[in-house]
Figure 1: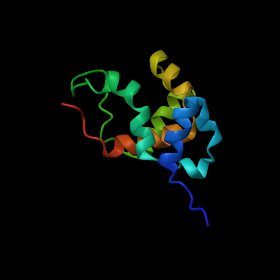
Figure 2 (figure 1 turned 30 degrees about the horizontal axis):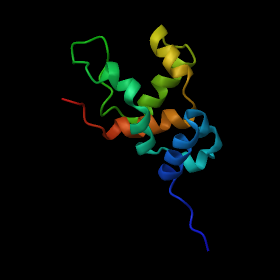
Figure 3 (figure 1 turned 90 degrees about the vertical axis):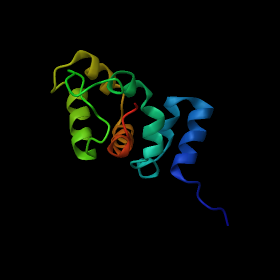
Length: 112
């Protein structure tokens, strides 16, 4: 009897084989809120948010609650929040990718 492959491993294999578009092949329940996938996807976020300070206009997202993170990113994606850079970035993210990023950043420590 074959055993199912963990979602993070199957996601990594699909990404290695076909790039980001391969994520569409995963069933939503297989992706879930996979923090490892979120870590993989987080490099673009940490370009700006990893260097932000408490007095910066760029908010600190490391340690941000998952629900709040999801609400804010979806608001940018829907253009309900005004910021052309974030709207552009959020527009490229699906619900599963947003959930994975939220799971990652909820527990991630800010780089020093």
